[in-house]
Image (cartoon, rainbow, N blue to C red; front, side, top):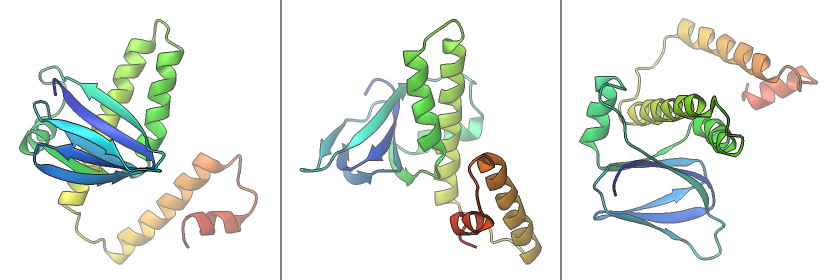
Length: 168
């Protein structure tokens, strides 16, 4: 492995061998592997495993020190995507097909977003946040509903859709 690598599983199921560890990965999961680790992906029979593999090397001081420290402490890990990579990865791939004068900057921006999203997801899984107070939960619920409406206002036909999609 000549660079750090993030694999985003779009669908299906596979087994990832990383050094002496075997991990199953399914659609919607992210697998990180650090430079220098031996690895391979083996697809389960009859599985339509689709994935995006992103290899990268960061410039010095291009990310916060907490990011570098966290990633250097781990040779590899697998976490569940919180739907951020599901949205960013197709945008990244599309940019390669529509390459123009702006594409280098756009690709760099998407890569940084993907790295930060992976870091946030992994640290939240390993170091969960403390539980929120009742007023914080209420504020979060309102914020979540407003955010949902803002993102989907063109497609919402009934208020029931909002409560259904947000499980309220």
